[in-house]
Length: 534
Image (cartoon, rainbow, N blue to C red):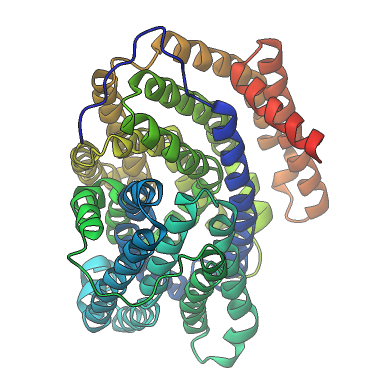
């Protein structure tokens, strides 16, 4: 692909921030529904299993297919499949596009099936490597191994679900794939509530539910693809030009996009030395994923088609504007979420998780992990936008190089910080590694596209910092309320937390309104259009 050329200053701009914001809003709304159910799922599991040995074994086992999911499915599929599939859909016939979809489907199915079989066979060795803290507990090691074998087929179904998502997103059909995880969460919740009583080891029912949920997530997208006449069929063509092109893009992408999963896996390995460590880290990261999934992933998904078109047409100035818009918008939303989780993490966990087997000690442990993870939330989210910009330029090597640096930083910091901070040090190391990763991408992208409109970005961040002052004061008041010292008064606690969050959000947006924030204006403009259409 030829390098995009900078447009003359008087060239017409093609950046449609409203369409990007609208698409991101649609994806975010669908993702919000999924995250709410995912949150309920986590609350149910916390109430049933707490931070018990069974829960630790489950989350260690779940980490293995989750790592491979990032490699074979969600991240890599969007960065490698969507650009190539969009090119075929735009420039070639519908039959050629269907042939590519079928060849990609068959190749992916074949590869992931082989990996799944190998994973099931190698599960004892994988668990032994990933959970050295279980070596002295034969029963715990056996439980984690069995759970790994039970859940490994989840990788197959979630990979196919990601391919279906890639097809639909390429066609700008965002709602169905964004809603697909809703079905996954419903199935897992159902198994946890209604199937676990029939098992001698109840946690096994949850593992089976994970696999069934992955199947549901894939199957519910098939009707939408069929309606568009692109439902894949068996067509074993690993040498298909489009598949080979995806392969060239995906190899470095695997490392770049899996950096978070790899860092979390390192944390899981080391956290097995601390009682409750794997569970605290899991729930801490789950809470981080709530705003990250709703806003960060949604905006990155919506912005990729626009960036790809701009890169393909050589509109480098438009691409620069779009990247600047993406960074400004993500920081506008993520920074208050980051501060809110840091200040209100313990009250949130106390209200939603501290029931049944989940104790006050577990609340404190999870809150400490959440606080450490939250420090890096801005970089977790910014990485999505920055990496997407490189992928639109068909450069998957630079994010991979940054990922290597991030992983090295994570491993070094984890070994150092865990000596004094235990599992909290592992979470902090993951956050710091993400900052290293994002910073490297910012520096290189700034040089690659001739700047990121820094004055505009600095003004936006400055407005956000001012708006965060009243938000932080309100959150601090809520967190320091005497109410949290009482073991009961649940309704009053929910009321105080809800009103506190509403007041802090209102104060944040109110200050932005007074400062004439462009980011807030874009959001309000979309809402007005939606209301008029309604």
